[in-house]
Length: 409
Image (cartoon, rainbow, N blue to C red; front, side, top):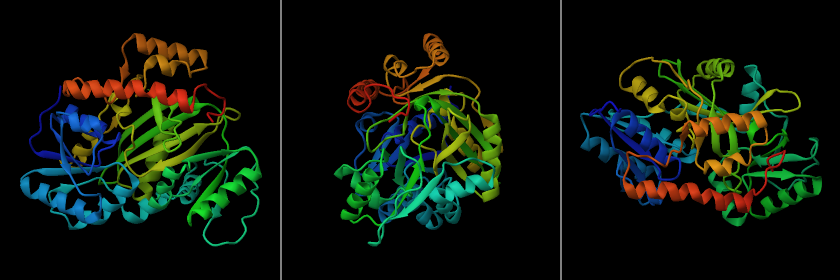
C-alpha cells in the first residue's frame, strides 16, 4: 500500500518504454501522479491514469528548462523530483539543473565523473583501478582518413560505439546496429568503410567476445546518496535480451538475485569517484573461466528499473529518502522473482540450463512474475496496451532471434 505523499511532484523527462516504469514506481511508493515532459509519448503513457503528459516541442535544453520552471512555479511549496532515463537527456538536465528554482531536485552525478564513467574506454580503465574486470578492447578512431590497422583481438569479436551519442544514434535509421558480431577482418574493414562513408567521426571499440547466451549476463543498479553513501543495491540474472538491432542487449527478462560481493566493490568505487544518484551496470560471466566482466555502465537508473521492485525494493524510495527526507536508509533486493516484459511461455524456450529452467518454472507457478507495463493501479486502456506490448515480443523475437545460440548472436 502506497504511503500518500502530498509534498512531491515527480517529473519524467521523456515518454518512451523506460519512462512508464518510473511513473509506476512513484505511484506505487507514494500514490502520486507523474508528469511526462515529451513531444510524443508512447501509447501506454497517453492512455495512463497515473501520468499527465506535458507536450514539449522538442527535448532541447531551452524547452526542458522552460517546462521545469513552470512546473516548479506552479508547485512552489513542493519538491519537484525530476528523472531522466536517456544519456542525452541526462546530459541536458545536468546543464540546466543549476539554474532551476530551488524546489527542483534530481539525482545527477557531477559532470566530470559522469563523462568519465560514460566513456566505455575510461570505464574499462576505471573498473581495473578498483579490482573489477573489463573485456579486452581496442579503440578505433574513425575521424580522418588514415588507414585503420587490422585488429589484434581474436575473431569472432564484437564492435560497438565507444560513447552513446546523437551522431551515432541517427545511424540506426540507416541500418547500423548497436552491437556488431564479426567473424573476420574483412567484415570489420567494411564496417569502418561504411561508418566513414556516413561521416561518422567518433570512436569505436573492438572487444573480445565473451561467449555464453543471455543467461550469462547479470545486471546491477546502485544508488549513491548526497552524502556519498551507497544506499540502494539491486541485482539480477538476465534470462533474455532484446535482439532488435537498435536495442540489442537491453534485458527483456530476468530473475532478481542478490550480488553482495559485487555490490560492495561497486558501491566503494562509485563513492570513491564522487558519484551521486543512480548507476546501472551490465556484466557477463565468462563460461570458460567464471570471471565476472563489466561490459557497460549507464549513468542513470536504466530502462528496466522496475526489476528492483520485483526484487523487493522501490528505487524511488531511495531517491525520496535521500533528497526529501534526508535519510540514509539502505535498501537491497531481497527476494527472487521473475521480471519480464515478454510472455513467460516465450522466455522459457530460451533457457537451456535445466536447473535454471526449473527455478524459472517454479517462480512462474508461484505467481512471482512482474511486468512493468501491466499495472493494476492504472486505467483499463493502459492495462490492455501493456498486454499488447507484452505480446508484441513474440513477433519481435520470431524476426530477430528465433532460436537461442551459445553466443547470443
